[in-house]
Length: 150
Image (cartoon, rainbow, N blue to C red; front, side, top):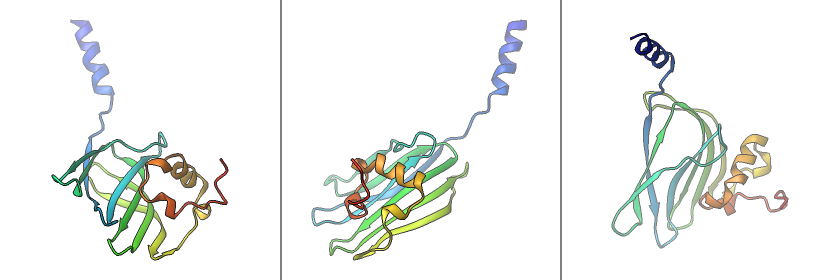
């Protein structure tokens, strides 16, 4: 019996974080239109895995994330079929109620012009983006080719 009591105590001492479910609209048309949000973990520096549910054509859908409440880097891209492009990077805090609070935001691309160079971002943000660049949609628009040293 004393073994059962110890096990109960050890379980009660371990905090259990509530999982948060977030969904974002997704679009990839054959005419160049894109809408997507990619979330990167500050803890690992890697893109958080997500589930993408698309329509039959695959052009539209919803990207679903299951996250723990914490701070994340959010890479948001939107491009219209006519070529207007919007790319932003945000440091966000997600709480247990699935509320997203923006802590910092940088607009990298708006309309048809680049607003900020990748090299102008804080070092830790820049490193996270560069390490995941092959998986970030339309990242080639914000890459500063003179800055990348590979």
